[in-house]
Image (tube, rainbow, N blue to C red; front, side, top):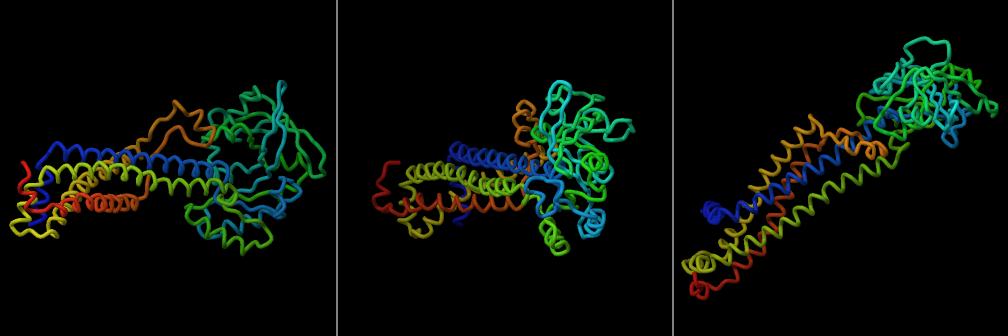
Length: 407
């Protein structure tokens, strides 16, 4: 009985009820979509970094990361890579020789990270071969040593396909040596800083230039079938190779994990602030509803309706008002996230700024399914809190005085 009365009371003033519901609906749709957009962009940045530069796991000589000294390398890296590739959830393994160098053309020069790779193995670990905007990925045999550079670096060096780049680098004897490479490909990723500071060459060519045994490597990159297994696989590899440094992408880029955790916390805080603001509107609307029905509530109490039932009626009205708008808002937010999660949002107007910090120019909003359930619980909790004050206000009415109130 109370439930049906409360539901009818919600619609006695249709305009006011619709305004409050629309506020809840648009607040939730906007909040959920904003949260999904921030979360999606963060996930894309992490995924892109894993696919282009970090991989899920990296293995080094313990002293290599101090200053990228090629003397601290992994002997017999082929054997290590073979054992790693046989581990569970490992999808691909690639060996690198990587260190700092100077890249120069006839007009200018700049510092770069030079990475010697086996192109075939590298294609399974990173997506650089899929990010080419010009040329090829070490596919054509040329007389000069081939090199693939980032688009921004090519612009900095005033270089283009077929042009020669001179690499100045420290060899195994700590002496500076130089080698000429010819640009065969230009790539572009979501991270302009990476594109401006990274070059790829053949591992054997770089080993020959610096005098390193070609069977050695400074790092082994490990790509997994799913990122969620990163910690598990890294733990197993640490036990298998106790003398080597095994690191996850979270160890290498702790700021990513910190920012990701911060983003997850902000997702709920942001929505909580929206619901907190909506709660004031709901309280105000219900107080107005109670004040307009002072005489009616007094009569109900006079004919025997207990204060407990009056309290429950006002609370149910508030909950119905909030939850109805909440359900529609959550469904609307879900539909919007699902649509743009597939179609994407073109942010090319600010792509330069986004790529400077590693974000993609096309954003795909996404949140976990559990988030909608948690939002639903937050809406119900907000409705309960918002219903208490109006309901208590109704209880303070004295039947005799309420009946005498002017309609």
